[in-house]
Length: 309
Length: 229
Image 1 (cartoon, chains in turn orange, yellow):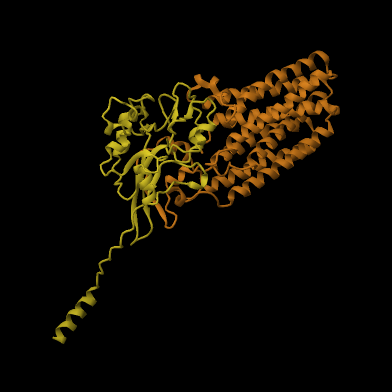
Image 2 (cartoon, rainbow over the protein chains, first blue to last red):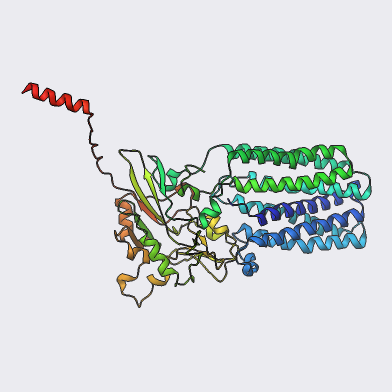
């Protein structure tokens, strides 16, 4: 699949934003020490809003006919893209009321604001799930059509959010909250495990072949002619191919940038190093998202000569 | 009613006539122009609703060249319709034709990702998704003579490899062809239940290969023949 830059930045930024918002609210309401500070809550909340809003604006970038984008809320019943849009918009009023409550009442918010906050955290995770299901629901791409896809999106969103939260908390208050750092470390380990399982899983040969695609299942089939002299939409969208060497290099880069270095930086407990860890994780996740697209092979490629997906 | 096409892979010669006729009819049809970008340039890109690919099946001496025209299969379980967020993609209740409402499409490409048959192409100029309409603006046009109320690709096919009809009617020509020639669906394992069906090539006896003898054998044979005489 052709990795569209707008979709990469959208999923990484809004993923971190929703992860940050959800952890911030849940941490605050469950009474974690480092998060009972109005300044920390509001700063993290505004950063989460900025990440989500910038991400959503980026997502408009890949529409070929954006003037009809407002119609995207129409098919909530069947379309995951529509559901994502509805929940992404629904998140705003809940989160804004929660932030307003924190602003006026401080860290000691009343029951009503707490319930609104809990709903905002729930909607944030549901939105992440909807985003992942856009990809996971496609039967045409076996590398995506798996429950590992939503697992990856949710865990990586929460993971990047937790590192940003730890970075903000430690640099604003000057004393690092050990629970937030333990959470970030645990999510980093979980994220790395989920990603490595995914990489092993897509390596197994499976799915449709050129034989099932053409219906000739009892003989070998080879492409003689694609039937056109220059690439069309299908080749440009689905024919994206990366050399195996480059894939391996980028996988190593992704694992080092997004998981390994941030893990050691966070262990140090220093707030400056945690900010660097957050930036490295986000850039590592951009590589991760690029690979997610570049390694996905759509079944249309079989008609253009690939022997298997 | 379940309208669709039967395509005979035994007789298709890969002339691209169906694709050209399709482009000609539909570029002025209900879905607006089928634009081409840079049509006379170095890298022309355009939206076509029908593509023909050629394959070599099996190995010599049993090998056969198969031309495979592909357009929308008007699937019974069309994921392109369910993934569409705007409601631009829809499947008609009355005849099963899958269409895109050009006024609602926002060009997000998700339906083309959901389609396993590469039937949908984004119009490079208009930014909306284009696909086979089964010539819906032709097959119901009562101003046309009845014999011409068929998709443009079917009318133009010089080898009559394309047959249009109702798959719900067991006595229609398409249903009979599928029964008699063991028609196949493409990629049935994905569960889209495509309506369009492909008739596999008929089995023909393998042609004997001419045995080219070496010069040594030829001379030996000639000498033997001479001496025996």
